[in-house]
Length: 248
Image (cartoon, rainbow, N blue to C red; front, side, top):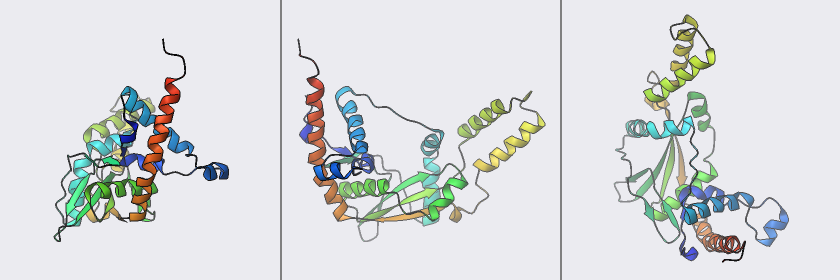
């Protein structure tokens, strides 16, 4: 039997869990937003039935396959030895798996979250953007888990792994509907595609954009305070679901 009062919430979920209702009436009534409720239903399905819908995109695939390359690039540019954290963590409120935990010379910790950009045109705008609110919440959950005093989001532009590059070339070949892969028009298009996905010719220092995210105690306390509300919502939702029909 699930003990809803002990459920802990993943750091990656807090961007949705913190959203506010749209209508004034819902805000005044203390109702949870539709986005928050949708996230809670995902959690419910995972907790009760062990079902989790994994949404994958080619951008996400690159993030997984090229994560090591991004960490190496970040280490080179920052002059720090970053290592992938392999240990999931939890406390009374949160669970999470920080990408990188860096111990500074004074003994304090920093959490770095690595984002591998798909292409140059999705990477460069990060230079002008403020950190995403969802990522800020995620990192602060990590800070609570580790005791870290701050950290950063590091957007890294690394070349697409061969596996992804070949997939994109096959997709291009199919879309062009040419006679063979040796057709001159395809070979030219494939060369242009490769240039859009391979970045070794660009200075490493131009391929990392860092957005600092300081520890926000007020935000951490806000998330902690919301945990009992979220747990009660899940418990009430479970009761409602179990009482759809009389049990035989």
